[in-house]
Image (tube, rainbow, N blue to C red; front, side, top):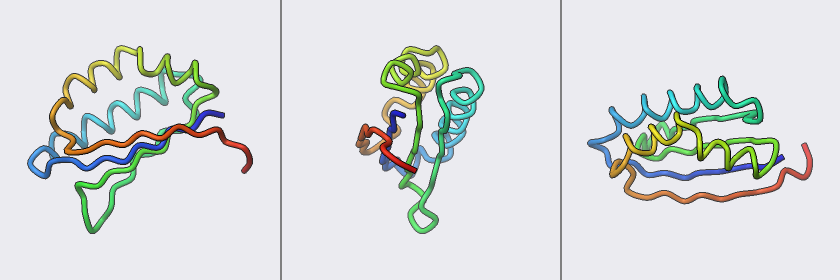
Length: 96
């Protein structure tokens, strides 16, 4: 399994617009991408502008398909400029 972990800090003024966009992208990824096994959206309750994503795909090709999907491209375009920072890490799941 291919794991993507994304650490985001959202500009506070964009948070009300960003979160619905992100949650919709996560929902559509789970519903439309058979190889997307998990897409968790986590938010720090003490620092709501800090958002963490945990995504699980069958393999790298499935993640590449996610990046090429219409719903991801729409999200990415709509969310331009909203994150203050973004760090993406890719991992291989080696055990449960």
